[in-house]
Image 1 (cartoon, rainbow, N blue to C red):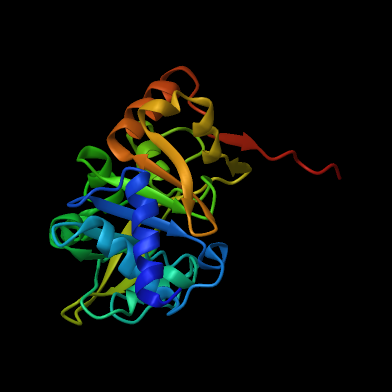
Image 2 (cartoon, rainbow, N blue to C red):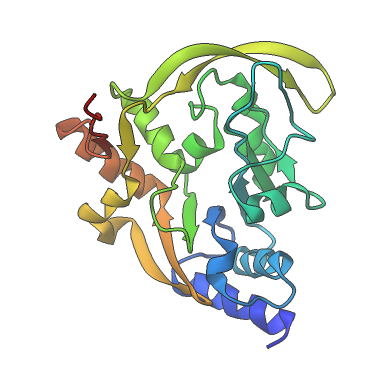
Length: 254
């Protein structure tokens, strides 16, 4: 199988799971889960672009967690630290990135500017101007490519609707350099989760028929989630059990 055949096979697998031309798709990924891919990560990107077509928009998280107090988030230079595929995509020609010190997102396609540009206005990680929030408010889709359901950052955006007691930590000031090379400081309410394990795989206990499909892309077990329907199911569950998607970590005895 050559690169073209492989990207076509990936595209078919995604289409079988409901990814359509014109879709805006946010991808969480484990590249190694795919098995051998001729042409590497670019072949995977081409598979997604083939599936969504010229009117679609492809997004990857570009999170830069763990910045120190003396570090500067530089939207052009600061690497992503959530895997090989997001970092490859960040450096790919034509890709744009939102301005946020911890929860930035990269995008390529028709809706890139619409989804990314206002993220700088937020003072939380996944607020109302973030791509995560906007995908849940429009017809966005989330693809979990070989990484299971736990690392779904859009769940943080849904938690921000509710503000459960475990979500927010202290306010912190970050140094930022934007696309125009302007440097500034901005304060953010950080996410905390201290004492809790995130259990976003528990969406499987909801009525998944309304928002989730499971299949394969090459060797990778893949989930496709409809973001607006996921939002409705998750917020409805959190009305009755605000801590449903986390579990307390038992404290060690002294």
